[in-house]
Length: 185
Image (cartoon, rainbow, N blue to C red; front, side, top):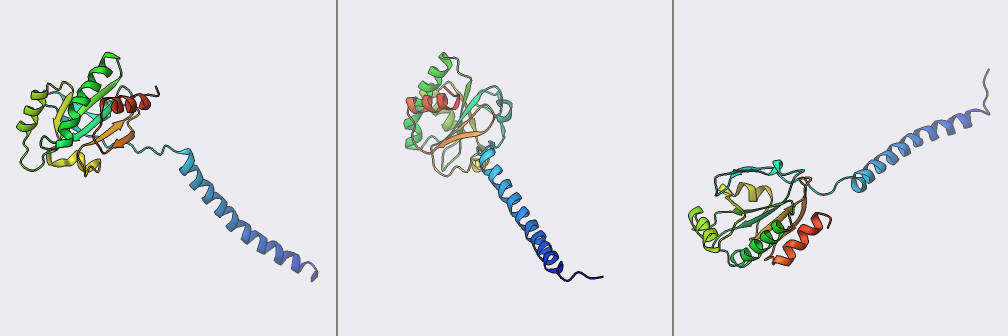
């Protein structure tokens, strides 16, 4: 027994089911993309590295996560803007330490031209800089952080994520302002 009057409804139902499946797939894809774009953590994780500082101690970025914010300053001695900002970094470092801020500063000397590690050590001593310094051999760390211009400063929050990157000469108030912003202060 056939029911010819039901066939158009069955065809319509079959068409709706096919289109509904594609509609459902499209809605799921759009929802997933929206969740990734809005609901996720858009700050990139800071690339980890380990090196020996000028004072002989070891520094590993990942060991700072959960304990300290970190300020990485990429520089070299014959860079005039780098030389100009170093006293501001020292002043900011001293002030933040007196306020018991949980922050580490690390000046990363990136060899350029005729600059040697001895030149960098001499410059640090000449200015009486007291925060951490190390040599970024072969610019490996600078490459990980996509540093192309000097000075470049990368601010990393306690969760180990890049909070902000500054490509310019920074003064004491700007450095402290960014650290305060990063700490939620």
